[in-house]
Length: 299
Ligand code: PMV
Image 1: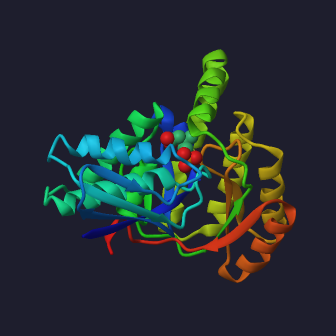
Image 2: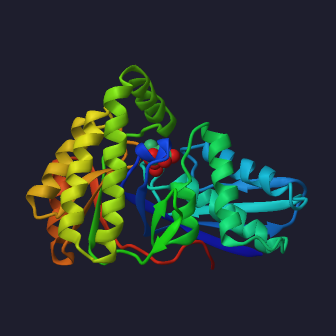
Image 3: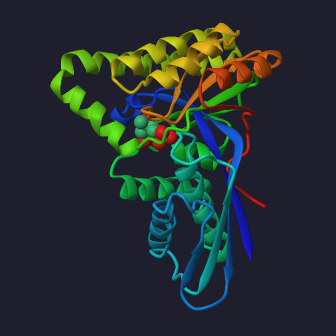
């Protein structure tokens, strides 16, 4: 039996722009999805934690199909447990995909490197979703703070991180295609917004290295304005974002595709509780989380 877990993530900067090759900065968080593989029975059986999201099995099945190019897979049981809320922009699909590939790699001694696991994870997401950037799968494999498409890894950020969850389910592919339509209609306007978001991510990398969380927060607020401009904000996320800001967050914005899902605030660690409570009073749920340096790992 082998058991591997992989973390979820938040975007500090760059969602949507990263789909067009611009830079993004994402940070692994201490919520994990665990995949256990045992060899038994006949055929491939999946026992998933994502009962309310049957589509999730598609990631596992596609990951197995990709892995089968390297090694024959048959007669296994796969058991998934997860702490990451689904369809929320926190990277649950990438985490289950990456943990599945890493567990298969170990079970069949396929000798894949981390980079190869991240790449196979990306190929899997691409096939299942039709559109995906390598962000989620890369950060879930490597942990820490990552810059994509450059694929550099920085240490985890050391400020407080609070997540607001609207509980409104969103579809990444629908939001990506909505932005693509807008960009197709007004390229001379939207292309500039994407460039500007990419520039914020580049500046964000330097600020992460300096631990300058005030400035990171300030730029996250600017990034939020541009996410609003490209039509992926909703009133419920705005309520949470403004509650976080008015209770002392350095910055707050959507994390992920938007249209529902989650927002992220960064703050001084002493402010986390107040901010989490304020978000919860404004709409939906909230929780305090921690950045993690650990990507996919054996349990
Ligand atoms: O909501 P999530 O975690 O699926 O993130 C989507 C981020 C996008 O940039 C909109 C798409 C992508 O694949 O990077």
